[in-house]
Image (cartoon, rainbow, N blue to C red; front, top):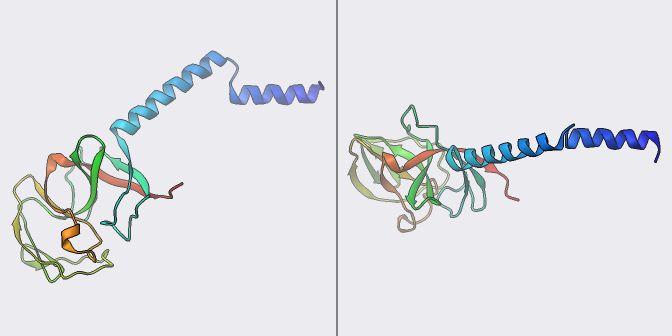
Length: 177
């Protein structure tokens, strides 16, 4: 084997493994544990299923729910949030339109908050939905999907207690593989 080939092999080994393979193994284990911890506690990976958030998010899109987003602040109107409904792996992705203490109602597809029509420029699909007045208590938010072109009967929406909101949607337009 020529000297230049040996030199290249040595450089590749040093770049890929380092000068001490034991240190490399320890680093790999530590990084794997750190990545696992982050992805199970801080940035929860999610895969979108369903059409309730069309056209923004489609079935098959991937992303994360940032669980630290509301650690020191409260959710705000129009935030897209992950809502834990059952178990650790089932979450809904919805948009907040009503805040604690407000009243929400829908007339002819237009959302009214505290009696005033809510401007929702993010909507592309309009509806003729009707929903009577919903009063929110001090720990409730009103959430709904963006695809209002679907019948109201096919949507899951409404009042959600604060403890069910896991975090804010983050980087949710990762292309599916």
